Each structure stands twice: as structure tokens, then as C-alpha cells.
Amino acid sequence: MSRTIKRGSPPRRPVQNKRRQQPKVSTLDKIIEALPVSHETLRRIATWSIVGAVGAVALAGATWLGIPSAIGVAIAEGIGRAGFRVEQVEVTGLSRMDRMTVYAVALDQRSRAMPLVDLEDVRQKLLSYGWIADAHVSRRLPDTLLVHIVERKPTAVWQDHGKLSLIAENGIWLEPVKAEAMPDLPLVIGPGANEQEAAYQKLLDAAPALRPLVKAATWVGNRRWNLLFESGETLALPEGDADAAKALVKFAQLDGVRPLLGKGWIRFDMRDPSKLVARRPGQETNRTITDPEDETKPQRPAMIEAKRTAFTVVQG
Image (cartoon, rainbow, N blue to C red; front, side):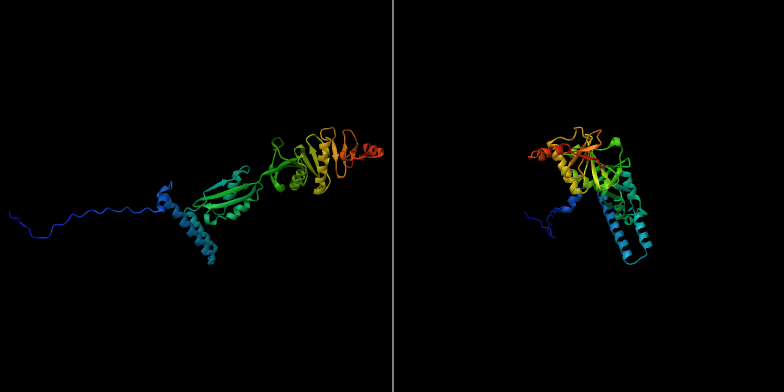
């Protein structure tokens, strides 16, 4: 048999389809895909950030080039109209201070356009309030001010001319307080007693056994303390921090060896740190109480009798 051979171009080989390679996904793309926000939201955030940065640079450049402030303000106001304007305030760290006061201070601006908000001015205004020890103010674009407050803690109650107030460390005034709502804090009484609060706390630290027994302390003549105990007695201390602490320690030692509190005395006087003078109800004179350590030493009968009968006139 003969084969018929057709002349012409040789038969084409079938072309194999090449597999299309999938584009590689970068680490950044994976992170973006994992975020719980849409691509549209991310695009808007990026746009806001760029506009804000450009606005800030433009305003700074205008100032540096000496462009009149009115033009710089106009630029900032334009940025505000574009969406960069304070619309809300987020406050954290508050416990005792009134939240509405912080909002009012933060929003007290001549303009709420973000570039024109003076963060340091807001902070300084907040620091004028007793409760606020520190404040951190920042922007969160496009429309939020973030305010974090560090509050002071009350350390004592101050009574002055019959009015009660909470005070913090160093006697900083916080707020008034009613007698029925007084917290369990030391009570200091008298003009200027609030400024002596730190010294008073240090005084009580010298005799920790007596601290829970002290009900209040009166700052007398802007120079010394009278302590009032829960059992009703008053202890007059000498002037000067060192002498007052020394006298209080001595009183604690005497009370530990021979209980004095709750034994019918109404007043103790240690303005002379070398001796303790006491008075009972109805008496117009004070009795000098001897040191128990002295009583353990050999003494002549005349000296013992003199100590037992020694009296001191009340000096006020």
C-alpha cells in the first residue's frame, strides 16, 4: 500500500499550559489581613495620618518662614474642617475627682482644630486642681484628646475653724468632708496644721505603738503639738521636731511599763522632755510622775518622799 504524504508545514506539537505562579504574600500583607479592620478603614486611617502630618508640617513651616499668624491659624482651621477637630475626650485614671471638670478643662479651647489645641496648657490647668498630682494629655487623630490623670491620695483630715477638709501629702487641700463621712485618717486641728501634716506623720512614726491610740492632734501656736488619745487624755509635747519625738518615745516607754492611758488622767504634759507631769479631773495642779527606771535605783528615803509629793502648777 502506498501512503499519501501531504505536503505543507509540519504538524504542531500541543502546547502545554504553564501553571501560573501565585504571587508571594509578604509578611506585611499577612499582618494587614489579620487585623480586625477592613481595607477601607485602613485606607482612611492612612489618609488621616498623612493629612495630619502634612498639616502639622505646613503650620510649622509657616511659623518658621514668618508667615503672619493669621495665615497659620487659617491653615490649622482648614485642617480642622477637614475632620481633624476635637469631638471627644477620653479620660483615664480618675477615682475621686469630678470627671466633668476634666472634660470642661480639656474642651476649654479658643479653637478645637487639632493643630491649635495646646496640650501643655491643658495639662497646666489640670494641675491647678488639688486631686491631680500629674496629667498626661495627647492627641489621637482624627478627633480625640486623651487625658490620663494621676490622682493624689488623702493622708489626713484637717479641721480649721470648725470646717473639715481632706488633705494630701504636704497639706495640699483636696475637698471638704462632712463629719459623718470622715474617713479613717489622722485628724489634725488648727490654723497651719495642714502644712505640718508630713511632720506629724513622722512624729507618730517615732512611737508606732501609740499611733492607733491617737485620735487627733492640735497644732498649738504654730509651734508644737497637743495629742488627743482615744481614751480621752491630752498629751502636750515640746516645740521642735526632735524634742517632740523624743518626748513621745519616752511617754510610750512609761506607758508600756506603767499603763497611763485609760487610768483616770485627763492631761499629760511633756513640754519639759525630762519629766512627765499629769493631772486628774477636778485638780488644779499637775502631778509629776516618776520614771520607773529611777525607782529601781537605790535612793535615800528623803528623795523618794520628795518625788511622791512633787507637784507642778499648770502652765496652760
